[in-house]
Amino acid sequence: MSSPRSQEARGQLAKKRNRIALMVGTKKGAFVFTTDSGRKRWKSSGPYFRGREIYHVNYDGRNGTMLASVISNHWGPTVAISKDLGATWTESKTPPKFPKGSGLSVERVWHIEPGLEDEPGVVYAGVAPACLFRSEDGGRSWEVNGALMNHKTRKKWNPGAGGLCLHTILLYPHKPKRMHIAISAVGTLMTDDDGRSWKFLNKNVLADFQPDKYPEYGQCVHKLAVNPSRPDVIFHQNHCGVYRSDDAGENWVDIRNNLPSRFGFPVAADFNDPRRAYVVPLEGDFARVPPNGHFAVWGTDNSGKEWFKLDDGLPTKSYFTVLRDGMTTDKEDPCGVYLGTTTGQLYSSPNHGNHWSMVADGLPPILSVSVSAI
Amino acid sequence: MIRVHLSGQLQDVTGGMGEVDLDSAADLEAMVTELESSYPGLGRRIVDDQGKIRTYVNVFVNKENSKELDRERTKLRDGDVVHVLPSVAGG
Image: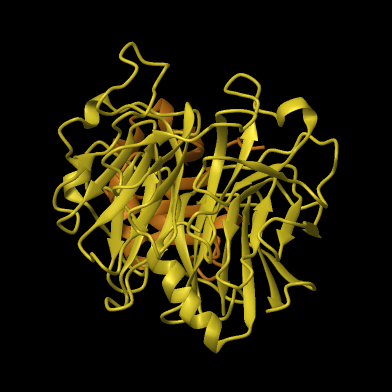
């Protein structure tokens, strides 16, 4: 779960439709798993784009299309669109591309986010090197966000290990000109004027790899998540901590509390309970493995004051890793949670993490997991 | 005429054609522009947003690697043979 908009839209769809699609992007292709609302038996299809890196696949509930970020090591990145749940794909006529003379070239599309309900055709893409693109024709052509591309601080932006990537896009139906984006390792930014200007929102967020430990920007944000019923409350997994903001990112408080580690990549918000969120702690920056070799999702039901382990059904001893887009939540009741590992295991929980079942094993390394009612 | 031989992986863009003949092109940059015009998506597979030949793509002119010639500015003449091939990369 990344965007309040998409949460809301998919929630509406879930009432009308009784199938769910789990879209999995991997190092070697895309897979789609479908099920009914019981979420017990899954039917798989794929791989699509065999052998190519699929950083993200998302579903646009406004028109029933899937959009995929497709990357070839040789032939470069593109966006592909499917109108039949992945059976056939069409490449964007004009994929995200920086203008000549900018000195920038798109390396990969990290995240694809359909726009608001009342702007059909609008889709956003976050790319590396960090920038935002907007499509007004359902992903067939794209235009760069000039304010971000020409941001006055851009020359001082530094990449994280995964590159200088814009990986999170949050949209808000109640404030359609507002958007949060997250860039590693630059931090959280927000626009309130539809992308014409951006401001940093990194107050109280630690960057202990910088000489200035609390800079205006330069933080390594790994992922943000929001529940649409409380759009000003943002959960934040960072390189240097786990945070929550209660004022749309103006201020952040550390909510690590009893978590076994401050370090991890994904964070997901529960669709039904706005106080509930999920993280996957790893030992730390220099040992990116589960603490004590025991992989677990950790959840909170009081906005991060306390955390509890959610590992029923997961291997008791394992060194799984989940990347920043490797965990998500659905819009059902109870809320389903899904995760994919870098060693190719795909798990689902139909009851907000209380019990996990394996959906698939032996997949290529999983880069992203998205879910939607279809 | 300039004959361009394309890697098999590029033939999904050309409808299965492994060879494309161009009446003329002053240099590789012009060749890529012409290929993109005739086969949308082909040019951007060969060069990046700034028109540079992609890191893991090799373009040979008469069997000489253009990265050892004048890259995108490598001149072309009537009768030249160009090969567009992926380099050894990936995992």
